[in-house]
Image 1 (cartoon, rainbow, N blue to C red):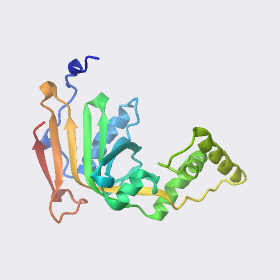
Image 2 (image 1 turned 180 degrees about the vertical axis):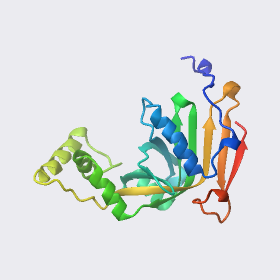
Image 3 (image 1 turned 45 degrees about the vertical axis):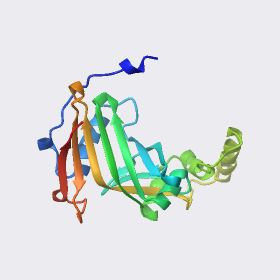
Length: 219
């Protein structure tokens, strides 16, 4: 495998600091809409969530962005590995990569649980089999085989044959990453990429764009 000679010259767009919106969440929504409109082959809302676990070891996985408010919201099992990581260290990062657009967004900040009401509202909107799957899966725990998981799923599914309502399990719900650092990366030719970064000013409030410092970083 000749990995050393795998390279691509990025030429599709540019991103200048003078065109950056004052608030990084608004700038993200603008780029995200472009990704949605492009109908990318992969899920545009797929993002790498990186957490810190035992012995300060990083741990990363792909999850799905499900809403944007004053932060970035995703859902999971609170007892999963990422949930346990966030319980001991509530800081994390998100990475979006839209290869077709030659764009990447990196987001860092503190993670908090969203309200139980909002988690339940979203859980209710999921397909019923996804709801059952959330109950059936002892996420991040060791299984003897796949049949063990499928047997548990079908057993729970049978219990709900007569109802259209499944209550959200208490160990499942949403998290919000509230950013203090957001970096927009646009691929450019000759590896002279554009990196426009938003830094939350000390004692700032991320809801107001005037409290963000916007800088250009060397690629």
